[in-house]
Length: 109
Image 1 (cartoon, rainbow, N blue to C red):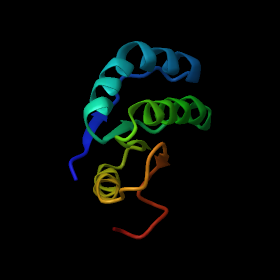
Image 2: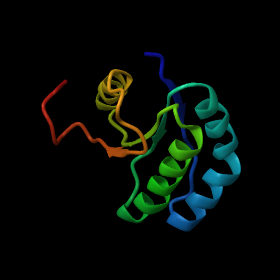
Image 3: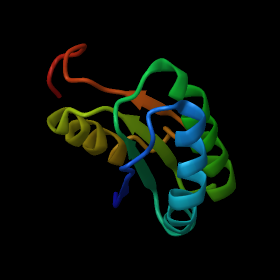
Image 4: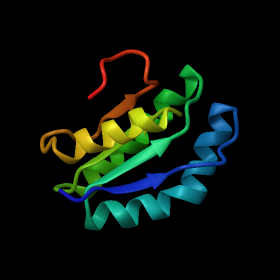
């Protein structure tokens, strides 16, 4: 299954500022992708206080884009992100999730 990947970069460190920057700079592109194909949004690793706004964005996009699937991945380990993208591409029932990956918590896929 084809999976579009949007890699979000350049967000501020503070959670509120990062949320604002995402909605201004990245949401239009995320919406366009999600309307036409299954989409994974890859966020850089961030402190715990970013999880709330990221999860809300992914869940709202998933509801809006249904039946297309939208999921988020947060992390900086390229190998683990690639494995997670591969898994999401073959997981037809998974949508609206934000998966934190770091390459240290699970066995290699």
